Length: 68
Image 1 (cartoon, helix red, strand yellow):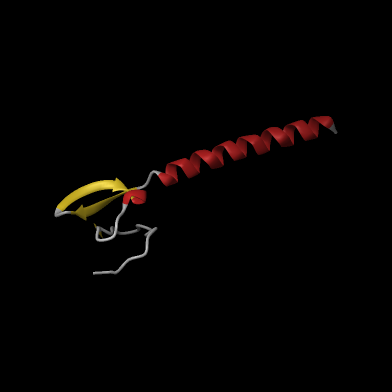
Image 2 (cartoon, helix red, strand yellow):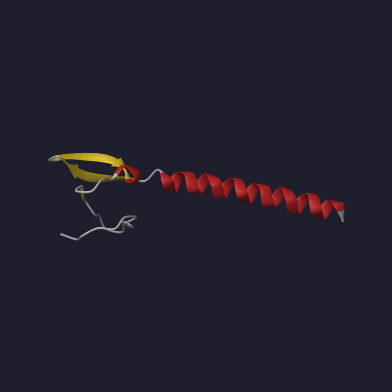
């Protein structure tokens, strides 16, 4: 019984560690933006009102906006 508990705990720990690593990679998403007339590559968390985002095929938009 103790062996099963230890193995299950170790397995859950490894899954949690992988999940955190995947979330970290997903949060580092960069996009191309036109800001002040210049094209800039930046994080999605740095977007401001008035930025124009280049949307590429297969890209998931994580912001609200107007499609031009």
